[in-house]
Length: 367
Ligand SMILES: C[S@@+](CC[C@H](N)C(=O)[O-])C[C@H]1O[C@@H](n2cnc3c(N)ncnc32)[C@H](O)[C@@H]1O
Image 1 (cartoon, rainbow, N blue to C red):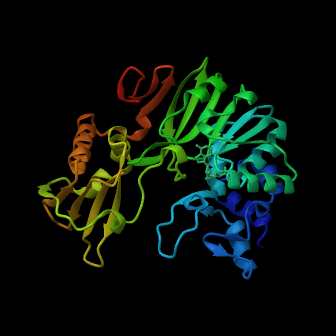
Image 2 (cartoon, protein in one colour):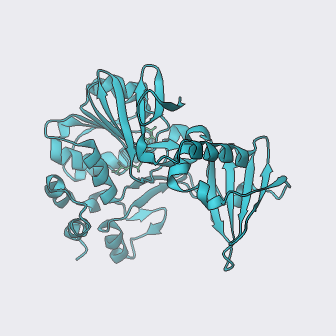
């Protein structure tokens, strides 16, 4: 069975299909939203693989490198996709969509999520903004083929779409570093759900309730969405950034794997906002290197992990001492008593964005 029904069964078996979305997921064929030829594969000669990709609970990447032609061997940054259906449902669950709601979606992508919303709420209640003209044009065609005509807008989703406001809900399907002021203006009493974070750790949903234009909420989940194109994190292959220059050497007694666990990485991401890491295992000996890179590619650092070691070699290169920055944040997290991410919250209002611990008066990060 490689049909929409298979996807429905898969989601049901995972316990990922809430009853209120059952009819929508069963009715809107994902196959109408996934092209036969995508950057990763040409399915025209292999229809069975296309069916497998479309009707599985898996993301399908539909664009890399913003649609620019990508030479063989070049780094491929995923820039548009049909998200994993169970993740779409998880987000829609956080959004708490009810009949009659007016919803603004940021990141139309293939149009599949806009089609779900249109089926559930009626197309006149759905507006979707996409920054990429080619992606939007394809999505509008997909939606039409599926029989839906929500408002689709070309633009930067950070500006929302004021002509359709006020909205009861805003759902963003790309990762934001902050919640734009325009969203609060356009959804002054309602709920906003967005993947949120900084370059160091972007795997959180922020779910915010907005009352009279002031938002407050919490962090959850482990989403892996593409970045908002207007505020991307650094990315690339290690060899694109590291050019064999020697850095400053030192050592640390902090086991490198400890700093990239979710809770400390979340905390570190509040202060180290423009650097990212990559864990690289060596072949078989259990050794590994933890790399840090600044988004601007001018600085890097490494910490060498070896099993049973009591100290780990550190090397830091460039204008920033990235390991020192991460270490300071990690020790700060320890001083706070190693709080889990679930104890942090987010407030957004006219004064900007503040992250707090346990209560809104205990601010630990701001933008
Ligand atoms: C994961 S895809 C969206 C999936 C989509 N909701 C679906 O159902 O197919 C993320 C999309 O966000 C778009 N995007 C990124 N930054 C944006 C921005 N600032 N404003 C609007 N769209 C943006 C990307 O071009 C991409 O198409």
